[in-house]
Image (cartoon, rainbow, N blue to C red):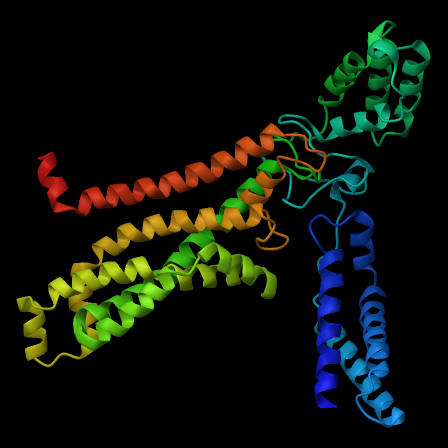
Length: 435
């Protein structure tokens, strides 16, 4: 009975998390986000899934007595639903600031980049706007989408009038709608659909805030996402490298100082971790563990420490026979003082060079996972933007490939150049060659 109750609670938990993550996903439709914000959504979801799983578990004959089984199933369902409801973290409500500003309900002061990474307009289709386009250019899709195809691409006078008649339904001020009506009315047949749309886009681009690097397939600003993704990439690189350096330096110091059996055993551990395919481990972990930044930092740090361990071991093997180490032993200094106060400052320089290359590797790994759709959930990422460069229809979007790809390339190149500069500054042979 206890095992059955545990299985029932576990299945309910997994189903609830799966449904809730779909409603709160980055690419969830607007109606799903609206339902998630409703007050009835949490209790209804928890109670509905708990009862559904309980009904299935009741059909399994875990006990002979149906009354006992019903009490156990209902008690487990109630306890699980109550615990999920109590522990549920409510996401922040969506605030349609742009819509309220256009309606005159609020006044807003904007920064140089007036967008948040997950912001997208609710009254227009702003997907895949080119770099430099304003947010109001998306309104041209409302004007031209209902038009049927015309022979030779030209529009008749009736078609132009139908476009003009839909201007009144656009979420624009009266002055802007009048300007748009004058622009469309000035066009006379024969005019192509592309020519009229270009004229309309030129008028719409006069107003509204611009997307300097365009938008992605969800209508979200690319530049804002790239800036926030830079924070994610650098934080993962620095923290994971710090974890790897801490583990590698500690184990490498023990191997190099003691040698013998300690070195033999610990170096076998190093070889085992060197043989582990890191990308495969990250892909598996993203399927069974929570997909957040901290898990990715921990996994990368716990599997990339072998380089720091080998460099530290080699340096400590050279340093342990020198006079200052023998003197520290002779005066009876504790082991941690000998290792980390006297020997480590004299042997840490190769580790610093390796750390800069490890940061670049961590950034590339994070971009790779995000490109595969396995990165941190609901966070902007260079790899996720790069994956949007080829949409579902198979079209190639150049600005979603160039800008994120260039950011990944420059970030990795920068840290690699820092490592090269540290190596040149530290290596005495290279310094003599320059002299």
